[in-house]
Length: 174
Image (cartoon, rainbow, N blue to C red):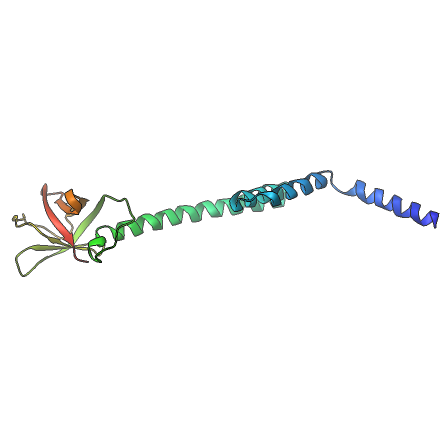
């Protein structure tokens, strides 16, 4: 029996010596990560701990971080496009307050229509329709002309025809 204990102890010491020296430190790191209450910080702690295991784990962590950076850039681009698309639409649905902070939209005129009261309706290349609200006569507007829609006083909007250097009040109808 005594010989069996000695054999088990010797085997235990041999296995302990064969384990990487950083395994004990990794255990402590993982326990500390588990104690983190903030989900984002806890995940970052685990990612950092995993990256210390091997070169392959480190490469996998770096690849994931690169992919996340690409996804974040795509999301930011999509958010900006959504803000552009929503610009001026708060008047389409009464009582809704816009969440965006965008103050201007640059577009090109796809078509110019005339309303029954003689006011111009600008169809823009981004799909928006803006109706003239002031009775000023407009210079000739061509397809492809650049237009800038900006926020004006008291929640109104102003369209500026860039080539003609003319501005007039508008409201979004679509």
